[in-house]
Amino acid sequence: MKKSFIFTSESATAGHPDKLCDQISDAIVDRYLEEDPHSVIRAECAVASGVLFLASRFSSLANVDVAQVVRKTIHIAGYEHEDFNSKTCSILTSIKELPRDEKVRFDVEQLSDEDIEKISVQQQGTFFGYACNQTTSFMPLPIFMAHQLARRIDTVRQQKVLPYLAPDGKTQVSIEYVDRMPSRVHSVSICTTLIRSEYPPKDPLTLKEDIREAVIEYVFQDQMVRPDEKTKFFVNPEGVMMIGGPAVHSGLTGRKNASDLYGEYSRYSGSALSGKDPLRIDRVGNYEARYAAKNVVAAGLADECEVQLSYCIGLSRPVSIQVETFDTGKIPDGEIAALLKKHFDFRLAAIIRNFDLRSLPSKVKGGFYRKLAVYGQVGRTDLELPWEATDKAHLLAHSQPTL
Image (cartoon, rainbow, N blue to C red; front, side, top):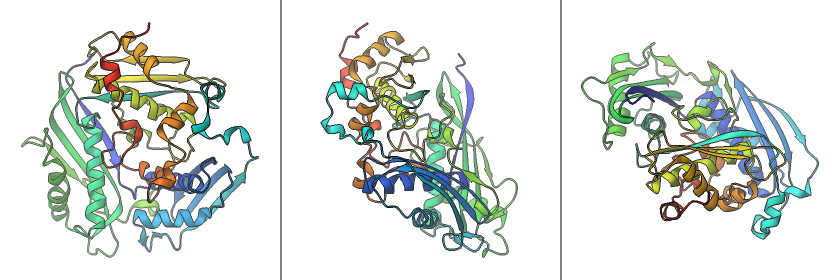
């Protein structure tokens, strides 16, 4: 296993077309669950130029105006310019109501252990959760910093610190590792777009200085690993780009899985997370795996940990639970896996119950899942995510495995 290397991760702003589609898909999930927590909903979105296409399948008592949800989400993302905006965007829909299935309309708080065992997953797949001690959020440093930069770009645009910025943007951070720990910032890359009214275009040198001062220096000022005199900075290296967004390149739900999770520092499944209600194990299995991995590291059992959960259609619990600690484990990986089986309930209905996944959209102002659709679905420090809790760390640290 390599000890010294350079690793790069990327993130995107709320106005990136792929992230816009993720937010729209999850905003629709939120609206259905707000009105009817037992809703079954799948929502996928594609956008290009001035046209947005939404495919939705649902079974619910809720009555949702999906076009209104779409336009509101476009507005929140910052698109109010002539090239693409919430008022004039054409919305095409393919919406189908599915037969109501009373078996899924269960109250998780009233389920017995026997009931939970009977609720099986309807999707197959293998899902990964990862945690490490590189940051206080237990996330790899490259993706953590890439998200912070993306968030800051949106903030300086919204607060008019840099009022000429348009919503579409991308960030990339490369970190040098020594002995599998961050050593220095190798390079930082930021690509932003400008509103069309900013004409003539902002001078590239001025843009670079603005971004470096208002975004890069601001984000890195309190970090243990900061840019040095050798760090390379790239701000719009291909030149100043006007507008961007759907007017220039297309977007699709689920195309940014790597940045949704660990920035490719850890493995991840190919299934999209956004646009799915909590009955989908290919969404919530990722959250449970992250919860388990984070508690392992928080318990001091390893410096980094990857938890793998494999599910089979028709069964309630994973057929396989694997742990990899990359030679950093304080006890054998097999013993850690045994501890997870002892202290965590990986069954679908138990995950929904323990994380309150059906009720959160009605409890969180502005929706819950839409906020997950940008800046990462794990490792968030701005949201109180149930799978980010370390409440089982003490159990893992002071328990003997059941082998």
